[in-house]
Length: 341
Image (cartoon, one colour):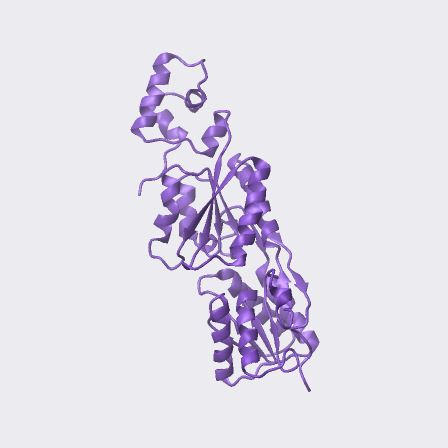
């Protein structure tokens, strides 16, 4: 797949300056007929489409932001709804249009699928949400195309590659485990998220760090591989029971899987939180509606998405921005209590 051409490429082929190309793009009359023809001919030969930075140089404005989000082929979860809501609010503030682009995370063509609208000149900036924000190859491919981008909820491994915003997931895991330890729990299980979702792994790492600081061995916390939806949490609960570990507290990588685990616990005849504590992450809208209401970590996803648009607008204007980290906030509800006995 060809790399998107830039004003620089047009200027080289036309034999003029980048400023001259910008004036032509802006229909500035202070350009000779000869140079105008050379620029237009070069742009046509290169199949050049002005990106956001080119339009800004030409006195125009960026228009369309591409929100890249994962899909499973099923109706989108609350997480994306909040992500989209915040991004729409941010786009409205800056006079931008938001275009959703759903991609299957497990597809071998996921990079090509993400790059297709970029190479077609259909967007001026890209928001990569997890797990795509954890993919260094996709990030570098976009950067090679001079496409402004921002990462949302990426792991530490890619936060140095581009601007972005996300919760400190390791700190969130540490805070949750510290709270459970203070309640008196000493045996734990952790329902992990998707294999390539680094944020969930960092939550596990933070929990393990708190465990070690408290003087407990790693064996005090068993872990099972699971996804991030309701069914994954339900099956993860069954697999935890099969280990024979008998934890007094189960930490789920997100609220949806925690809801599934709570359902599994109820089916098993357990009373929550008397017999078992279950907690999650995200503070989803439904978390306080569960029975019992879920203790979780809030990361204000819609606020992060709106902030992502603010940062991306600066990136489009070639302003360097660091990755911004949102501090986790513990939300205590009735699903967590001291262990019996």
